[in-house]
Image 1 (cartoon, rainbow, N blue to C red):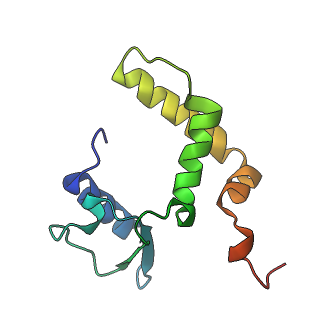
Image 2: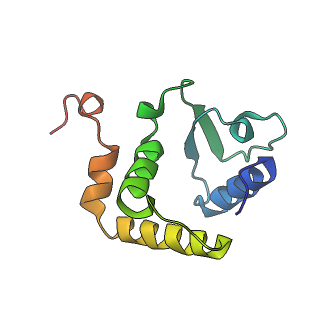
Length: 117
């Protein structure tokens, strides 16, 4: 989607909801972007939102993913068209998901795995 707004978020919620197995429940970790917190959203009954603290990107693993994608695939480039941006982002994403150990390391925090080996 070319925009991050309430309409896009609602469609995203509906898609997530449709993928939750029957009788299951999803928990969605969100930052406090306006389209995540607006009262205009209709939250599906099988999704519970958990809002992160404001101004705490270190708690949001996807912020680390974006940082990695920008640093390793998307920085210092000029795009001619919107489609070129989409293509580059998809290529970057596909490259990253082909490296599961990297994904794990990006989202892992030593302080979050206390007592686990």
